[in-house]
Image 1 (cartoon, rainbow, N blue to C red):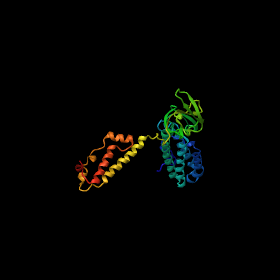
Image 2: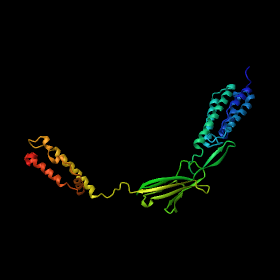
Image 3: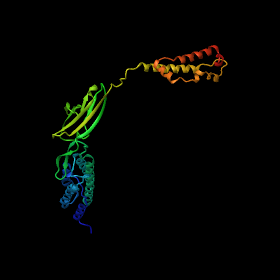
Image 4: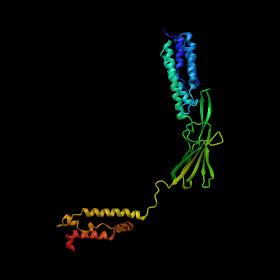
Length: 346
């Protein structure tokens, strides 16, 4: 004997796992449940079961708020983005069932199984919000709008942490723009914030107000050495205390591409390198004189004796070719002129 339809509905309702959430706070869900009762049930379920089904559906969805409170998964509230994601997920699955035109007991089974899965989906959304989006500020005070599932009310929750958001090192060259950015990732998502204020902090800890307004950046064009130093940014709130405080340590370097005045030594050194390179190249490319083998060519003392370090330094400092090098060059030229070996000339 098959179980009665009423008992089947009761059994399915008891199988629904409790999960946290508050999708009934969404007007879209209210409209969808009204349409299910008035438009779909009359042609797909016996009239005597309409009231029973709708009561159990509403109870199952209301039970979303019965999830135990846990700091890592659910604290009784979500933000509007999480509520919208869960609502659209539920509506999509509900539309899939109604579009299939399923009727009778099969319709009831699919409906309650879908609600079971959607509760788990909402629990996942709520846990994701708790871990990633709930009070995302690592410093300062953020005012976050939350929807409390117990009564569907929107309230402002203060996420209070240390107001000091640290220091930033800024390096800029002279004649370039200095930009101090005080905005943090959660500032735009926070409620109750007013304006940014930038101060110049002096060595004696006194401060001068530089600018105030809605802009989160301080831009100083064509900075000079006098702009180097310490700055403080403060983001105000509707309360008396600032939401965030941030410091900037600015270092101003010399103008980009600007070099120190070239000294005569630097120019002389470059000339000397080219002179030495040319002299060595000429020595290697010369053809040995007649009756002289290549091995005799390298017997010439001038080629076997490296230039002393002291002489090299004198060359670089003086900017000319040392006298010893000139004597070697003249000696080599004389060998070509007379065709004599070193031994013969002695």
